[in-house]
Length: 309
Ligand code: PSU
Ligand code: MN
Image (cartoon, rainbow, N blue to C red):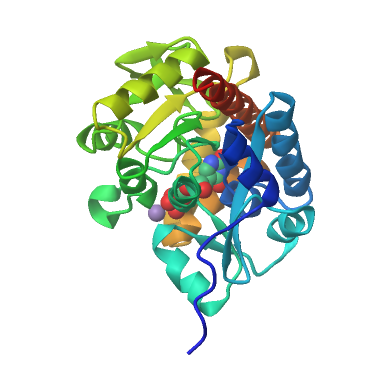
């Protein structure tokens, strides 16, 4: 029998911030390891941490390194997650297995949120949530992100869900699961690469302080067993050209069919197709999206820390 390792290794800096009441922002690693191309992903990972620091919060990038779930990565671990060929994509169900087998992997929204909550972090930034895939009626492909959000106390800042998904169905599932979705300075759910998915939202919030107020009231009402989604759209003038978007989406979905891509490969395949087929335009937008989400998450974390002083 191998000894069970410490369940969670929280970096000194993150531990200190949590103890001091400094704002902490969890950052996921799947978008680094599997969502962005090699060569650019490491600099984006570092940039996201820098953005969080600049706003006065402490970043906690989360991953599993040699079986050890870690909250807050040192520069070596961050580089390994971004560059190593053997980095697995770990959703929530994979965490115990990866820990037992000593594997290294990047964490998705579901597993990052879980580990962040375990460490006592309440705010998390990603790019786009996983959700209900098109054809889900046949494939049953619904991201574990959704059920994780239903059971994890966390403000999750995202730019909606990737347009490769069934956006309306994803919003319906979030409603069924009892997870509130707040449009940040918008009345429509964002479309990840696009400013708007054209799906309306019930609630618009205009400040980080109001997001904190929602979180506090959810706690008071016994609703802090679940996440709140903060949907932060890319501005219209920075979005991907909608015509290009629709064309590339169609070709990507067709390729998915003809190559019979399934399971956890689906999201990375489609993201990569977008990056190639748009000549890097979608990559530029994707990077802007995650940078803007990290900045907003940091503002929320700082506002929350301030309100607790
Ligand atoms: N957002 C991005 N890029 C990504 C992802 C999100 O900008 O690569 C990842 C997240 O980690 C999310 C995952 O949890 O895609 C969803 O994968 P799946 O559909 O297999 O659950
Ligand atoms: Mn899936």
